Length: 384
Ligand SMILES: Cc1ncc(COP(=O)(O)O)c(C=O)c1O
Image (cartoon, rainbow, N blue to C red; front, top):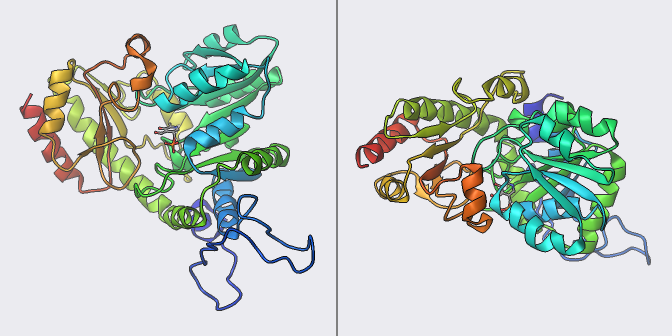
């Protein structure tokens, strides 16, 4: 079955009682047991049919062996880290979503898991950071918000040679434009809050495992830790996936049109979008970020540097259609100021090192008419 058909049919078992085409939401905490211990599902933290439908569906899109869904992207990341133990060492992409950094830097540090934060866009940095106790390499590609790519296949080759596992946060691309397991990754992570759900109305996360063995371990963590999504959120996310293959090409088309317009402006100090030939990793993006037909796709996340906080604030104030808000990947266009919003928890020094200036803005280009978005951006640029 090909990708687009899978978004609609995988995991969608026919409903037996009335033949309902849209699957029911099993909004229940518990299940009747026929005899003591005789059941398919016993309790919704351990499992729920609506959640199973969603997990089977996402699993098929990333070509994994198992998928485990969570109540947020961060609980998905936290569960992958919980596969490991005190004394283990992990390597992380230095520029990740601010919440991921906060989780690792303030909560996970308590468990004495050693961490190295390196620029994973250069594989030599990874090679130098590997130690005898390195167990996991965690990459975000492209990164939030600097849009830096890491070469997933090369990193997996290096890691697997040394028995190290690789996890990829694929939130910015969705499985429509990047399928890390096909490139060798052991785990794929999504904040399903973003493109997978795509309608800015659910917080959720998922891990897709390359092997059944790690799938089982993660289901155990999911059940034991209890950070599970409710049945209604699973249903909404599943419903949204049915149009993932329609939304993503449109996001990509709009992203490219907006980026091409923005790159012409002399009011912008720098633009970060892997679809532009000026992006230092444009060639890698063309090779690594492929739609199900093998055509390159660059998504709809764009960062622009307007140099100062005042200029960024003026731009946002005069920008119509785009909503100033955290999050991304929804059908509606959003704009955010990473230094004061998504990446505030990094602290000024780390932000400066990564290039997250006070003038940086991150755009999540939606699926509106591109002409309207460009007109709105033009007006806002004229105001600074
Ligand atoms: C790349 C990335 N990963 C993970 C997360 C965390 O996801 P959630 O907010 O669903 O916990 C985010 C949130 O913005 C993100 O952008």
